[in-house]
Length: 285
Ligand SMILES: Nc1ncnc2c1ncn2[C@@H]1O[C@H](COP(=O)(O)OP(=O)(O)O)[C@@H](O)[C@H]1O
Ligand SMILES: [Mg+2]
Image 1 (cartoon, rainbow, N blue to C red):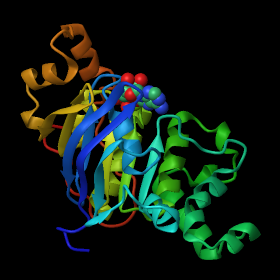
Image 2 (image 1 turned 135 degrees about the vertical axis):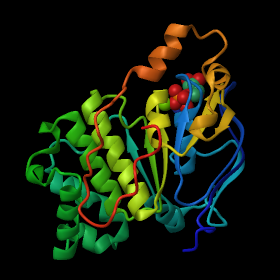
Image 3 (image 1 turned 90 degrees about the vertical axis):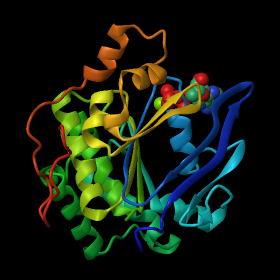
Image 4 (image 1 turned 180 degrees about the vertical axis):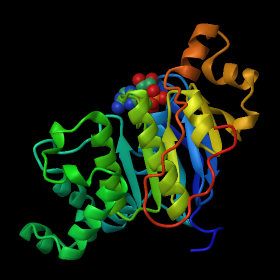
């Protein structure tokens, strides 16, 4: 895959719910390998946009392309292939709580397999080894045999990331992945996403409710307000005026400072993965 291919392109995408326009005529092009943070107030349309990208919901208007192919019109097995290429993690983790961690991770591989082998419920040794390796990389292999529901929130989100990686995705979408976590776990999860982005070159698009996290981890920030993109640029270009545009002119200083600081993490990044060199942390982190 060349660097210029595998671009995610959102062209003129609008989504209405009844009379309410949640997402309004969005045009964004995301080249392979970017780590993009989408910020904005609650209700700005961030989740709706992510959900359209991996086709949990469909646009009312407009098209989404990946690597030159329209993914917004796929059905049947090509749609399932796209949903495999475009993994998603959620604020609430979406694991199966009574199943053990290892099985939860292996579920990420289900849509790579034939219905028959899925019905037989058998995973190969290689798949199991890959699942364990994914858990090791996220530093939670020791939890492999525990029911997922017994893990802490931070551990559960790492299981969800391991499950997403079992899909061998080209794009990883994350909808407020750290909104339910304490600052330390938030940092571990964001470090994991950055590590995946840097090492595998997987495009990461993540909705974030705090500005400081977006600034610290993303090389591009998209600000949304009332369904529209009102900022699209590098973190260093997100100045006070731009922040006001994203969060609203009526946002008080307290609102904005809460948005900036509520998951502030200042501890030195810990390197989680085991293979290959890691690029330096982002400037200013
Ligand atoms: N399934 C739905 N049915 C009706 N309205 C929805 C639905 N999902 C989202 N909305 C509305 O769309 C708007 C954008 O919501 P959302 O994308 O969840 O914003 P954000 O993730 O930025 O908080 C909101 O007004 C929300 O109420
Ligand atoms: Mg949301």
